Length: 231
Image 1 (cartoon, rainbow, N blue to C red):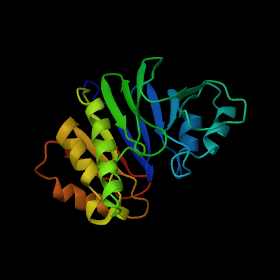
Image 2: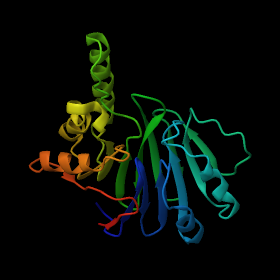
Image 3: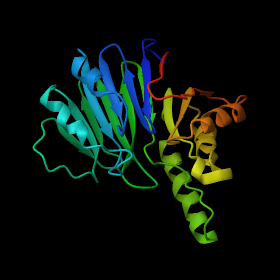
């Protein structure tokens, strides 16, 4: 990772603020304290939403442009925006975009929308959105399809260097809560993996961290809304 000056703030669920020397990147805002930071920051503001589910896209983010007209929005192609918003960019899977010193590529999801690979100032971030092995206890046919779809998409990402990955570890999947994250680590070996998508059950991140102590990726755990870590 080329840039040691990076601060990550956990907002809630899959929402994170990532601050580098020059940029403030907001991923999948749903709830949490972010508006004042956006308004007051002197850095480039780029806001990402991976898909239209309300726990990943809150339309309030579009109102922030009234105070910060320079905000750039990177939205999944399935999100409908009725307002007239400047600097609005939509990405479908495998499309690329460059904004300022950011290089962005969208990958697919195993639910709605996309996942994002973002290169910024020497670091490469991956936010999975709802890309996951949704290993629900279902019919054998549906379970096989979920596994196939997820593993095929991970293989498309393979070969990319990932410094920090934000990836679902969802307690609703019960004993299968970490299947997707484990496979993602096995195949892509991000330097750091940050569990997300656990809503009000942050202890699952601790459980996962303990499970992966000897794994090749460092597990960075956030247990409280608003918690910040500097790397």
